[in-house]
Image (tube, rainbow, N blue to C red; front, side):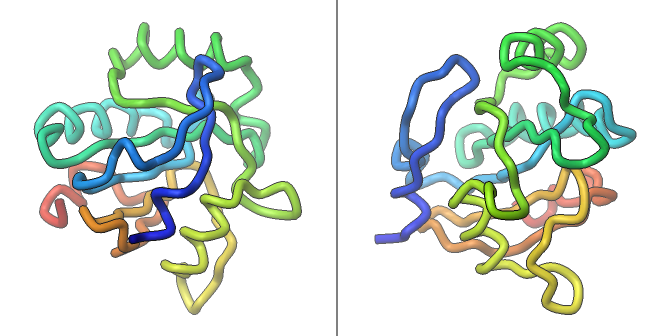
Length: 154
């Protein structure tokens, strides 16, 4: 059994759940923000999700740690994503991805797939982690890596 399925997360509507419901599918876990230069990646993330949702789930975790680029409430974030990018993939409550308050899921992801030169810190919004169907973290993608450029890994 993979450890990733045990993590508790809170969806954007405030419901606590575990990642167990996604067992058997690949996961693309992304820290997202609504007011970032990379925000247009929501469109590509939704396209990848729609094209592969039989085998892949995109999971969006809003984060306000980088330049205060996710200042809104969960309801504002959800509305922005749905109205601006027609997102339908699962979104979750705001989290921290670095520091003492980092969500345990992101601590695990950073440990399993370190960044450049072994760095564990997440450098900016839209860092992406690909997890296989058995829960193994396969790869970390940089914020500048557009969703469409990673499609071949799915």
